Image (cartoon, rainbow, N blue to C red; front, side, top):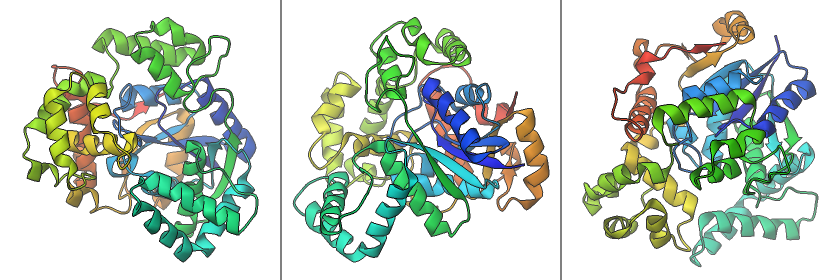
Length: 399
């Protein structure tokens, strides 16, 4: 059986995602689709709208055959590490191809952009270092250095100011670093842009637009046209169970408590906390009325919103610099769910997988997996006062 891989968050799964799954299978001629999906906390440093099991159900109901969890240390990392962890897992599970969505929609410009930077790495690094010394943020320095290379060596390159193109570039980079034969494909994103608000005259909306509508107190019915019926039902079930969708605004009381219980020196031990900001975190946590108010007070030219959110994610989950940087490679394949076809694929390929397959977390002792379990516990604590520990209680979902 041929498998195509996709790297996803499904936050939540919407009609654009359904199109991507269909096109990935059609374009590659694959028999099944394998999704490496972020767990409870995501790449932009925020809690998932609904938990990983609800999103697994959405995926399995809409064309995905296997859902594998991207470990916390990669799912909350910058794009380069995020992509490397995801492609490593697709390789480990035996995917021959992978397909990613992009604003460009053509593969060659991604390959050319990767070659441009690879062949001029010393110059690129020097440009970034000089730009950061002026006080601008790291992402902005990367973009300006890349623009300088394009001007010096004209060609057809991708626009790395667009978020999906950035991830696509790092997927190509990961394949090169892994020296892997997995073949990349890219599919043009359709409809709404990454940051667009929902448009009632369309059936396509970005996940960001859908979340913003829900967080702005729009009725769930207002997003119904943008998601498959199975997604809508699962969102209804979630709302009835928890009353609120997960967000930093929902978690703000616990996040503020977590920040204020530490000394400035203790805060600096957590992953991504840069020396100096710990005082601002404590000062503004005391006075901020909401998460949005807090973020607007600590955001600066040096610290982007995403960088700050990743920092806060690690403080909230208690992940230290030492813990996060101890892992450079995935060490297991955590199975979240499968269809009958996915189960058949596993039975055929399990013996040849280069990492252990985990279906019951209690049966495996692994420090990286322990961080995933902790992240789930802390995520659930922000939503409910009921018993927690679902990583031990919920087996892989079968459709």
